[in-house]
Amino acid sequence: LWLTEGGVTRKIVFSGDIGNNDQPLLRDPALTEEADYVVMESTYGDRYHEKEKIDPVEELANIISETLSRGGNVVIPSFAIGRTQVMLYYIRQIKFNNMIPDYPDFPVYVDSPLAVSATEIFMENEQECFDEEAMSLVRQGINPIQFKNLRLSITSEESKAINEDDEPKVIISASGMCDAGRIRHHLQFNLGRPESTIVFVGYQAEGSPGRKLLEGVSEIKLFGEPVQVRAEIVMMQGMSGHADKAGLLHWIGGFKTKPKQVFVVHGDDAVADAFAGCLSEEYGYNAMAPYSGTRYDLSNGKFIEITKGIPVMQKEQKGAHSEVFVRLKTAGRDLNAFIEMCSGLPNKDMEHFTRDLKALMEKYKR
Image 1 (tube, one colour):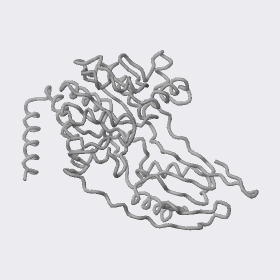
Image 2 (tube, helix red, strand yellow):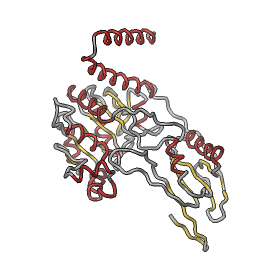
Image 3 (tube, one colour):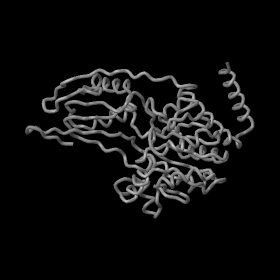
Image 4 (cartoon, one colour):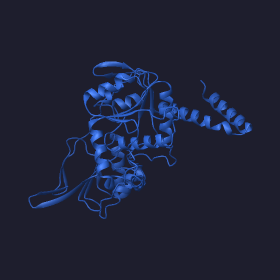
């Protein structure tokens, strides 16, 4: 963005959500070389992603298989642009490789007009959007995000009809943090069903309905009415589209000359402050995480007013557990899937494995 005022021109670069490299379907994020000012995100500015990632396709297949076998729905709150298309990419692989043989033709609904439009744009601009792996499928005449029994819902009538059908299904809907959109209707219908699973596939901001569900609330309000949480709540590991601290540093390091000022935004307050401090103290940038009301003169490069943050008091949620507990439950599901793969091990190895598991459980019994 170039701004000109009083004969003075300044270039401002907004990072948007900085993605990870080597993500499925989409091209890697591009670097920018020049800017007077930078406004950049800091979602994961205080942490590093795990190097050894769980295979998301296998993880998703296990979740879908277990849920369909219970007669439930898999509800995926997903961001309409980017993440929804990646989920379709994964599901196409699941179906193509027959990873759920008991339910090979399970229906998948995309219930978001914006997501439907975005998916169409992806397909119309495949050269600009898709990475080489996806393009290799296109060259073979394979649509990488389309498959049998994919149903796109646009009208409100089509959306309502999804939950009127008793057939177990996968529902992908926005918004990704459950704070707006049609996903709230699907939560209202499915949260009270222990046979259903709510699968989070992206970052959940503090205080958002999605974060509250991950933290283990036993009840949540939807459309002004309390809804009991009986469905299984799952967070898929390694799914975030946001770069970690190393990725953020790589992106800002792409500028040939350091910008005059870096404004760090789009992160929890403590994370944004910590990442801005890292840029300033360790890498020599003029960086800060401004609070609402801070004013800066782009012409002369000076702050006009710096405001202080006002802490927001969070209400304690009834029956809340930590997000760590949700990860523990996810690990338990992965363990069950791994045990099923151990049938071919020698009896001696299975005996050792069983003994180790029992010892571990005894250690944490209270």
